[in-house]
Length: 350
Length: 86
Image 1 (cartoon, each protein chain N blue to C red):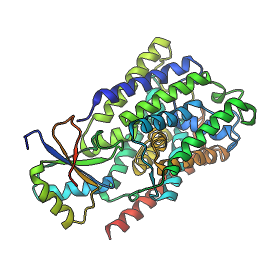
Image 2: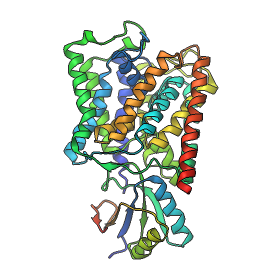
Image 3: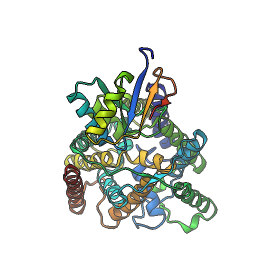
Image 4: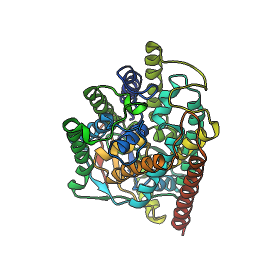
């Protein structure tokens, strides 16, 4: 029933672009990173002033438009929303704070691992632990409640805003903040980045590729379907990195990474828990935003806010590790997340 | 109905799918939790698979334990397009 071929193709394409967008200009081990690229966009529109991570990443626009166009074509553009909007916004921001403590979303975790960065293995253990905890929440009765069918116009907001952003970006690039050094200044050509985004977005919509769903299904129902997609991403990126000479195994001196084991573990642990509570990893939230899910659209805004908070208050990791403020933020994120989950579970049991 | 026929029930949230699984197993109804079939939806939630012979028992179970469901579908085979029953 489950078409593994599709999820394998999607995974291979994601892994291919993950490796080769680096050759074409994106930062090392960051061919694709949803958290980092959303963070760059937050910087590009001035929500934070970290000068080395500001750029309107066309890949993000491509992910959303790829999913939007294909879902319209397939008749799967279904506009829904209204399920616990503020909680979703907040958890989206917390998910981002966790990802930026690790320095990457789960997708970049796979790409980093495929480039030999063993800190990503620690992150993977944390992410898996987070997914396991989130899965226990689901078993105990956690639910953000059902969404409702909304008017079509609601689903057009996110794709519409992305179109406006892209048109402004190519016609008036100077109105945006733009890094001249650091990861934000490493960029693939605009049309190539957009094309890669469209390919990844449409294939992810079709295949339902999701890093969080992969582990959730493995833990909850012992189903490997989505996990096969993760293996495909890793395999294609590994081969690509070996071809490009971008493979170097070890913990130290890995690109855009730190060796703070505990905080790599906890940062992605927080992403894992919030992703299960929100029903998908950062990539999946963008894809759902494209196919009309306004709850995911709000999570995308939450991620933008989380990126701004992270960089305005020095909460993000850096090659030197995670500072005290970042450590407090991650712990605070866990406290808020557990409080929300606990309260909902107790209320649902009554 | 052939042996290859089966039914799939979808729920408003993952939690209800897991609650349904627990109750069905308690009542000795043979079921399996699966990812929502791609033919039904682009959502990545969980659904329940069961023999269509158990349809009445399944509906009764949902009513008795107040487990809301979205739809029940019948599949003729793994790759076929489903028929909406409820």
